[in-house]
Amino acid sequence: MKMSADETRQVLKEGELEKRSDNLLQFWKRKTCVLTTDSLNIYADTQKRTKGKELKLQSIKKVDCVERTGKFVYFTIVTTDNKEIDFRCPGEEKCWNAVITMALIEYQNKKAIQDFKTRQDGESASPGQQERRMARAP
Image (cartoon, rainbow, N blue to C red; front, side, top):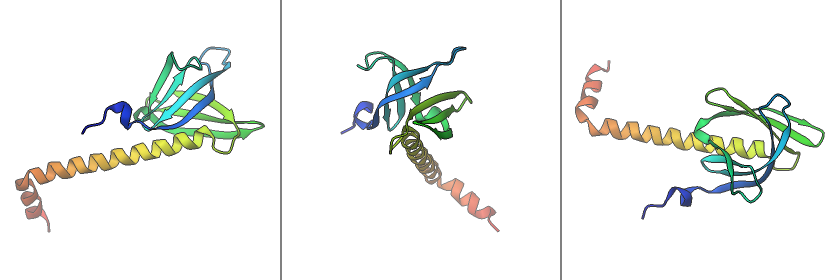
């Protein structure tokens, strides 16, 4: 039985996060966010009716610039196209930056294993290629 994409997506963290706006004044705006095993979904409203942005983990390069000042933890998500998105959250015990970082590492590990298996399957499918490789070995 094959599971749908929604069924395989597990919610890792859900709650409020503040995002710095891209405009000139750079206001902090409170957003409702849901982190799943494959994306960070940012909603414009608390009822999660209007999805403002979906950041797929495959498009995130790293979580950077983590700084704790006063009551907030500030961090930046850097995307694969080098765009920086600034966030802040209350300095709680399990802050968003740590959970996003762990989800990103988990995603990258799964992808690396999947890529490795795909290469292995491709090499074992063509036995002549393996014989040629062995013939070249010293």
